[in-house]
Image 1 (cartoon, rainbow over the protein chains, first blue to last red):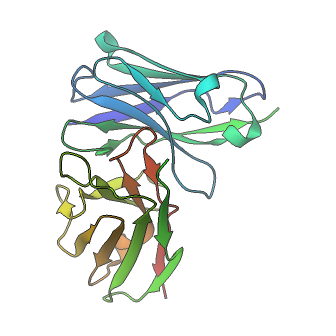
Image 2 (cartoon, rainbow over the protein chains, first blue to last red):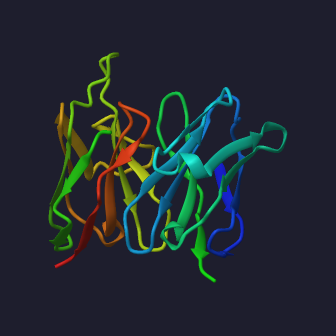
Length: 117
Length: 113
């Protein structure tokens, strides 16, 4: 069955770099896209960025200068790297799949990232 | 960017009652291919969002028929009939017609009256 699971550090210091991994199973990264969505505590959902089945990427324009999304198809993993973290980046980060037919149909459990010294 | 506006922000309901949530977009969500990419998600407390309705009115696998979606152009509605305890949580609409970015509504909290 389709599964996604995020992993990464729970605490990041301000100005440092966040590195998250989304490990997927039950589908191929070469025929589906994976998106990152984040949710600050008590707030709504914000699209962060995506990597398409062909390997190209799209980023939220407000984050683009600090953000990089890549993947390793052999390991079924998608990576998010965001630098110059600030307290406003504190959020739950989710990865989610989009297929040719459905958008954001399966989600990971999310990983809470706190930016604090 | 397409702005998605959801109302109400909070919706008190009684178990067994009906709920209606509105989602409006700042521009038409009709794609050049004729499809309308407006979807609905439910996020239960402490969980990740789950897809309920895709492309306006299609229920995702396993979603009970108490959930129905309707609308066109810029105005969309999610209706929940015979509300059950497991329906409580935050509801979000998402547009994926005009991307990037993909944009969510601000959310509606369905809670007990």
